[in-house]
Length: 502
Image (cartoon, rainbow, N blue to C red; front, top):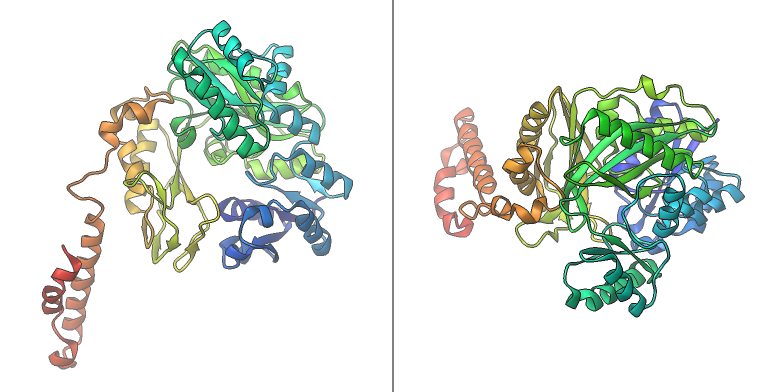
């Protein structure tokens, strides 16, 4: 049985994995780059080791250094989290070669489902619905143009080896085909080292819905229902919720069966996610499989009542699943939002810097997965996500109301954050009514624009006013102190008005 886990990741996901390990009585090993010496996951781990300079290519992506630390620390397993090496078949194979348990699927499943074209072929063979399109990689521009004309516009061009929105282009006009294909191939080459693309028929009004699955090493596979992930910006998820507001019990059952079939087609074990594109008529099509833990996994945990990290570890230990499909139920409604260090009023530019103050939201039905603290400097080398805020309510309406309250209570100063933008999303009628798709953000810009009358200064003004109110009360509580020494806070306030520019 696993006794010590090296977490080959950083930030909130590293801390989250370590928490489950601690509950299971498993020791943890952290790894860190130069930029992460003071990160929370380094403090939380039972032991931690330096693995290289700040850039991830020189640290968190160095398989040799991570395996060296695993041997040195006596770790018998490695959990990759998400991102970095989590979907790297070579890393999974190296772990096997070195006799270290990789807490995730085997190299075959990662490689098969990691290549989008191979995955499409596997799903077709398993009778899982796929979007009409190509089943072979395309590297020739002329061939791409011919295929697009054959399928018919509009189409999506996607990188065969990609994900995360990179190497992806939507083509609606014939005159844009050549530029779109060239741009997609160029971006795919830069991001993944492979310029092969594939082409799919574009689904109008698409909904992005994914199913969480678990498979053990004994052939048992279950799904833990769906997550609605259609609120996206530049193909990156912003808000996720479960259950999906558009789902019916009948379609949920059908999609769940398809997700299980997809996992069984590659003899999958571990936690994974089957992603689907769903149209307005609830026709669904396989999109891709993520062979790892998802960023948004906490909402499934909250609604289904299963710790997915503990399940991953149990599966890696060779234990069978303790529950069957009929044992799993959805209870209530959960929503997750991602808090980024970015300026949403300035084209979402990253906002690295030092956190001066942070007040995390608390209360019934609120979960906060973070890693930042007062005095922590957000590094510029990695994804700028600070935390994930997850709320649960008995109904979707209660969950939205609870999320609004939690965001109101969440205070971070020193860096710009996405909190104001998330506030605005929750006020959009289409979101409140649950009638949105992946075009949500572009179709609701009138609601999502910053409130220029406040322009981000309202909280600053409130903080300054509260500070001077504190000084005034302090003055009243210390009558023995000569007024000349203490001074008048309001006079000081008057002198500094021009500097503060209130």
